[in-house]
Image 1 (cartoon, one colour):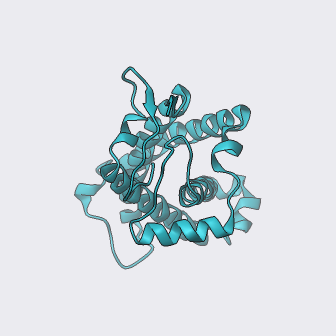
Image 2 (cartoon, one colour):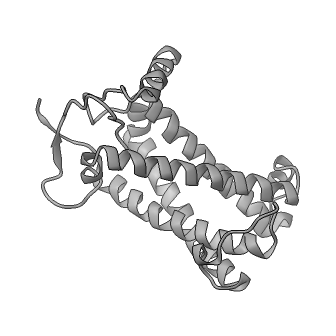
Length: 212
């Protein structure tokens, strides 16, 4: 099969900037959480950054700008280029169920790395929604008086903290699964790299073949 370009340069840049932003936001967020836990546990200090509450907040706000602006650029590029529609739609329920069943039995085949299967489409769209929820709930936590509508949608300040926490849990879970898939199919990491050549041939992966 002919060689194909898997990801535009802008998408690859956004991918790595997002990885940095998510790491900084999660680890600084854990530092902030520890200062006023929602649940009956805290995160190990070694897994946080900032050193103290004020430091965690500074890191969190700095990463917030990178995270938010990068997300807007990513969505904008995907919408303008038509990539969002082409890569993530349609999602057919029958195909989704079949792909989930194959994935659970490690039999999901991916013969063309330039296209996402139904499981991938749902995963990526779901994490986009989680990011939007994290941003919205984060704005309420930051300054709820300036975002009264968001505050009401979140059920108030305290509920916004809970929503923000579980949006974070979803994103961390996605990242962990993402890393596992990269380990199973290393060629997909190359598709997000910057070395030349940036063209890859479609391959048949007979098992454990989720593109990331």
